[in-house]
Amino acid sequence: MASVDNTQRFSDRVAVYVAHRPSYPAAAIDFLVEQYHLDAKAATIVDLGSGTGILSRLLLERLDKATVIGVEPNEPMRKAGEENLGHFISSGRFSSISGTAEETGLDDQCADLIVAGQAFHWFDVQKSRLECQRLLGEQDEKGVALIWNDRRGGDGRTSTTPFMQEYESLLQKHSKIYAQVNHHTTVTEDVLRQFFGPAGFEMKQYNNPYIMTHEQLVGRMLSSSYSPQVGEPGHEAMLVGLRQAFAAHETAGTIQFEYDTKIMFGKISR
Image (tube, rainbow, N blue to C red):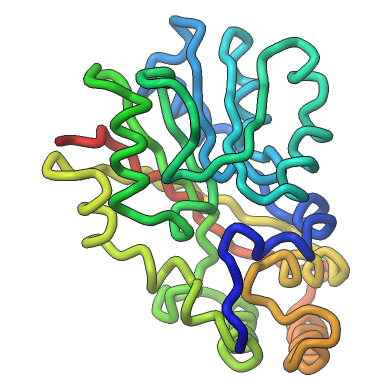
């Protein structure tokens, strides 16, 4: 299989990403606000891998004084984020730039908080660590929060429902690159400790279930970077299997898709 530049993996699935990716619970955003005292100041937040703006929007809506800078290397994703957050661009509270977690192009010590939603597993650990140190400076109250909507069963071990187990099996069977890019296998505790440094990191977790119709479920599956798209090997078989799993487990035309929102947070210690 031909190698794909990680920054371009979502170029062919922006529409389904916008329509079907889950948001994050209000409690998770409240935690970030309280942990980093963001209500008390006109904070500048840098959103690395900001994508279509899901996390940026939640922070902007929660904090009426904050500004958010989205850093997104994928042009179609970045343009979708700018369209979705047009009101905040007009008010001067959101801006987005073409850059990477390893080389943002932003000024030294410009950030009060750095966040990354569903993105850290694409970063070069050491280079992004150094870039975060540069953007944050030395102040103790500043830090980094890595956030995932973590699908239960995605690690192949977590106890979950029969439907979620079947969903995981479909990905393992039909996606050729699933094992390579699944963050459960690429973002280990050791990798996180390399990123945060000697002071380590902490974790907060929130239950974040989603109720989905079959159409929404298909969109959610196809929004993943590892799901084979139309015309690719495994695409049709994967959707057939998904339809069968949904039919076997649905209630009143919907299925509960189980997520835990996890926040790994800390200061990038030297």
